[in-house]
Every structure is written in structure tokens, then in C-alpha cells.
Length: 116
Image (cartoon, rainbow, N blue to C red):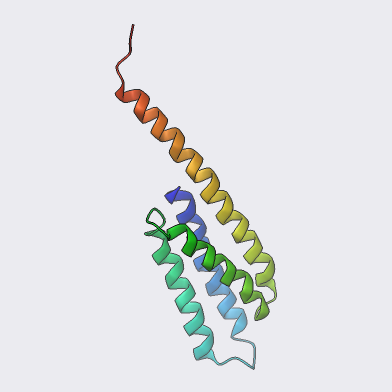
């Protein structure tokens, strides 16, 4: 699960950075505000890569997904990209857990001697 979720979060890191470049063109927003918010979101994207398997890691990832969708109020394209990444996050968590379960089953079978 960690690999799939981390890949999604790294993709979000870049998307947030590009959204910051777009948001900078808004005359109502100061450059400092844009890059403070984007910097925090980018940092969280990378920091969450290391906390995926810890308690609350997936929940924090969902909070980041909601924030990404909500950023569409500033950069309208982010509504679409936020939903795309939320779906990718769901798929990463869902299928990552299935992969982890299969790996655990195979490891358990490899540890048991064959009864012939």
C-alpha cells in the first residue's frame, strides 16, 4: 500500500506546485500567501509518504485530498484534478491493502513446510 499511496502523494506534490504558479496570476492573492499555502500542502504531500502505514496516515491523506478539491475555489481546474487525485488515493489505498494481504498470505505459505 505504501508504494501506491506514496506515488499518488508525489504526483500531488507536483500538481500543487503547478497550481501555485497558476494562483500567482490572481491579482487578489499575494505571492506570499500563495506560496505559504502551497508550500505547506507540498510539504504535507511528501511528509505523508512516510506516515502512510502509521495510525492515522490514511486519514491524513484523505484530509489532503479534501483540501486539494477545495483549492478549486482559487484555481477552478483544481476541482477536476482534486477529484482525479481523490479517486487515485482511494484506488491506492483499496488496491494497496489487497496487495498487502496477498503478500502476507504468500509469506505465510512460504513459512509453512509442505505436508506430503
